[in-house]
Image (cartoon, rainbow, N blue to C red):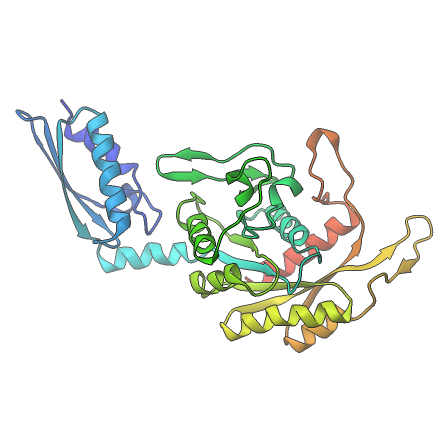
Amino acid sequence: MLTETEVRAILEKMKDPFLNKTFKETNAIQEIKIKEEKNHVSVKIALAKTGTPEQLRVQTAIVEQLKDAGAATVGLRFAELPRDVVEKYSENKQKTTYIAIASGKGGVGKSTVSVNLAVALARLGKKVGLIDADIYGFSVPDMMGITERPTVRGDKIIPVERFGVKVISMAFFVEDNAPVIWRGPMLGKMLNNFFKEVEWGDLDYLLLDLPPGTGDVALDVHTLLPSCKEIIVTTPHPTAAFVAARAGAMALRTEHEIIGVIENMSYYESRKTGEREYVFGKGGGEKLAKELQTELLGQLPLQQPDWNDDDFAPSVYAEDHPIGKIYMDIARKIVAKY
């Protein structure tokens, strides 16, 4: 026979699906009654919102856990939390800064920027998540040397953590690098799952590596995260900057704040002579930043990371690597602003 203390202990660990806080933190448990002769447990729980699909999932989880603990039957009633409690924890939830990394075209190193910027923010002591939202061209796990897959706890997906960054990617949900052949609505659903079904915990920054261009996924991000900020990645070639301006224009039209522009592949510097060669031309990043009325956050040269066989991550630069230092400078600029 379950006791009230045992029931309370089970419920206090469960979370409000909207506030991501435990029932103990929100003082959600309003009533517990136990009918010993029938081994029936009756509880009343307050949620941030009622009459939602999320409430149904909470209801199912409560019934399952109480029955697993020994209850024969479970009765459930729901109420809404006081407004001041919801506002208190909603404010806490909004502390996460969402940053989308976008580009007008592929091949400019957008995913490399996403990975290294996320790692740099984590090196500054920030809690960082990274969504590989480039659903057709997912590459983040491979770039970071991730070999394991996410786990499932309850009804939540637990992201993989590497270099202090929590990562989720379409790559975790396909077999043998299979191509993804989906239409727009299915892509939007998967992206929504990355936000709603993943246990991110408390994050300072959640970065999104967007597909290139202004297609379905980019549009979904603008809809799902109206307060998202953006960084536009380009190469110094004027044509690349011209194409990248489309992604920037889309961000501005949907009222996303553009944090700045990062110019990748700015030059090649010879390790022997120190001479710089501007392989892809000059000026694209500055021109784009000026057109979008934003800051040129940094210019990254062409150079590959130093690989470490014991801790292999083919696209992550060490903190003391010259390019790693540039990423740290960019990360510091972002932290100073947000």
